[in-house]
Structure formats: structure tokens, C-alpha cells
Amino acid sequence: MRRIFKIVLFAAFATTTFGQKPNEKLRQLDNYLQNQGFTVFHQQSSTWGEGITNEWFTDLLFPKGYFDLNEEQREQFLHQKVDDAIDSIRLTCTSLIKKASQSYLYEIHTNHWDFDSIRYVLYFYHDYATYDSTLEENNDSITKVTKILPYEILDFLCHHNVRNLRHSFRIPTGISWNDMQPFNIAAFEEQIKPVIDAYMAIEGAKAYPVYWQHDAGFKDAVIGGDLVSKHSNSKNSEHNGLTTGTHYFIPLKNREEAEALFNQLDSLAYNYVNSHPEQVYTYHYPKLHLNNTNTLPIDIVDGMEHKNSKGYYLKCMFNSDGFHILSLANEGDLWIPRDWPKQKSYINGVKTYR
Picture (cartoon, rainbow, N blue to C red):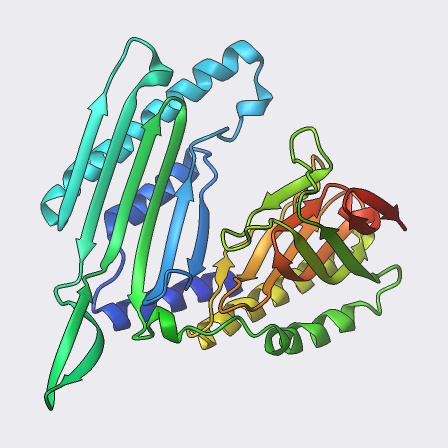
């Protein structure tokens, strides 16, 4: 019920702020792709500036049931699912051409399915310009028009076995990018820490310090290396990084309590970012699931680095041991070691275990 309430609340906010709401045909396309078994990610972000962007995206890979088949069956199954998805995307785009402010549809077909090229882009604009600033010149007020921002975009790329579909819907806030503030880590942790601490009274629950460091020039990798995730900060030319924080753990036998904690953290994060549109963030609509295959945590909220601030990340993971929460502050590039659930520290590849 909490999740339904949040989505309805956001839709209402979008309608009242815009005077309009996301295109119904694009919402139906989102639902169709999920019903076909494709993973569709949803997030809300202020990282573009000028407004809040709500978006969903998918790469049309590995639909539900794919891994239950043998190698020969998988290829045929994937081709059929992707073909049906592209037909639905094509039909949706062509039906919206007349409503779009700008549209671009391009296709090249070859004798080899994986080498087809398809690109569809639809832009829907406000019927007014956004104004950046007012300049005073010779006692006259001059309004400088900087750009007109699209409020809704559908972008689909299919090329050489790469398939990316993204739908974005923007809600203007009136806050320029220059006026955006860093994510307030201390204020956010004041919201979540008392909730987490209450669950640390559970038998077997633990809290561990996190310390991951890599210096300029040190190299590690996700494929063939000791990392499960590697995120580079474009402003960090040295590509070094320091991540500190806390790793909270609740045993698997307390799954009901762990799921309750997850739901509370999710709601706190959602309410916080919607109360602070002036802060730079990305909120992910997370779905908690048992993950036995790797140690890549799912994202709840990212407080992006801005104006020389630290970055912040709230992540979690359910595996065969239990429920893990990461509350992290980061400077530079964010590297997540593959064995983080059992490590004390990672310093330039030197791993210390508990």
C-alpha cells in the first residue's frame, strides 16, 4: 500500500505542476514490457537541474524465463520477445508522431537480426520558454531566454545487439542548476539512523565500519578483478577514491523485520528527496529480492557530488546470509569490492576480512 500511495502522490504532483501528466500510451508501453518479462528500472532525479525528472528505462535483455531454457531455446525465445517489444515500441511511436513537438524515426534492416539499426526519438515541449535570469542594462530590465526544455522524451536505440529504451518526464521546479545545493548527508542520516538503530537490537544484527580506498594509478576491475561495481566521477581526473560509512546486517531468519526496515528506509528516502528538490539526488524505485548470484547491492538513493561535496549512497542487498544495508559517503571514484559483505577494508587491493 505504501508503494502505491507514493506513485499516486507523484502522479498527482506531476499533474498539478505541469498542468498535464505523462503520456498514457507511454505508461501502457512500460506496463507491457514488464508484463513481457523485461526488467524496467524506474527512478526520480534532480541531477539535470531545472526540474525533477521521473524516468523508466530498459535494455530489453534476459526476459523472465530466459535462464530456464537451454542454449538453443534461449536464442529463439529472446528473438521473439525482442521482436514483439520492438513492434510495440514502433506502434507506440508512430501513434504519437502528430502529438510530438519533434520526432525522429530511423531504421536499417539487414540479413542478420543482431545488426539491424533502429532509432526513435520523440520530444514533447512546454508551450512556454524557461527563463534563466533577468539582466539590468541602461535601467531597462532584459529577460534572457536560455532554452526551452522538453518535459517528456522517449528515446529508443537498437544497434548491433544493443537495445536501450528510456522514457523521461520532467517537472519544473524553478530552481536553476547554479542554485542547486549538495545532498545534505547529515540531515538525511538524522532521518534514517534512529530507524536503523532500533532494528540493531535484533539478535545477530550487527553494524560494521566501511573503509574502501584506492589511490591514483592503482587499477582493479569488475571483470577479472576484485570489484563488483566501478563508478568513475567525470570531475575526478586522478580517478582515486575514498568511501567510508556503515554496513548494517540483519540475519536471514529475521526476514520479516528486514523487509519492514527496507520499506521504512525506502519511504524515508522518497519523502526526504521530495521535501528537498533543491538538493542533487537520484532516487531509485527499488525492488528488494533475494540475490544469491553476486554481491551487487541495489540502490535506494544517491546524493550526487555537487559543488565539491561528498557523494552519498544508500544501498541494500538480500542474500543467503541476510539483509545488508550500506550507508556510504564517497569522495572521487566509487569502487565497491566484490567481498564487501565480509570485509573490514579494501585499500589498493589489500583486503582485510572480519
